[in-house]
Length: 64
Image 1 (cartoon, one colour):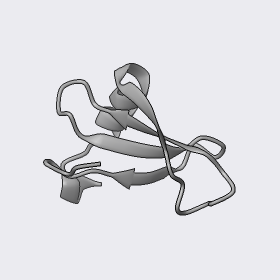
Image 2: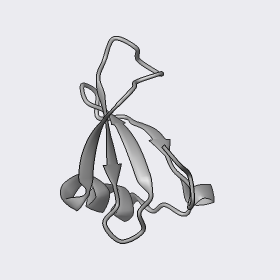
Image 3: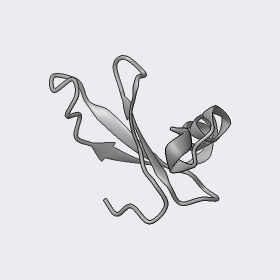
């Protein structure tokens, strides 16, 4: 998480105030997932909709 420039607070901000998009869950394939875009950084975090687990944090410039 820190390697890609994320703090726990930024993940919370992205979920609470960022734009939400459907995402593919490649970790728990039976579950749905959502990608949230942080409103200031533009970076994305992918969350398992059922477990709340952070599945992926995007680095600056990562394209989806």
